Length: 76
Image (cartoon, rainbow, N blue to C red; front, side, top):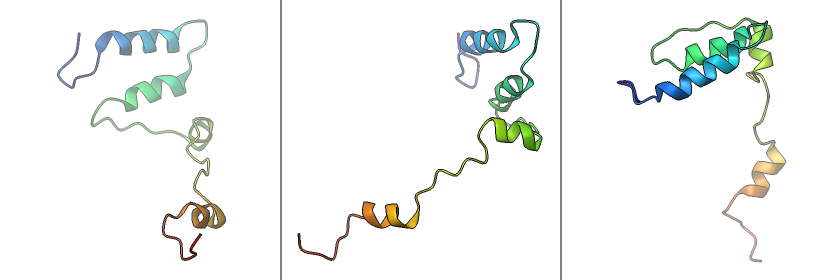
């Protein structure tokens, strides 16, 4: 069953149950589920943000960017 936002309720419930199962509650997982709600404002402390990969640098470096360009000036 989908809610008015087109999100499958059964999948969200399963994810929430998975996040909450066991003796400990993974607050980061709960916050991530909350962040999926349109318009929700969820705050993460710096340690939580780092844990979910918010600060992982995955951009291309200059050499890789130059290598990946499609406009080549050489006539190979």
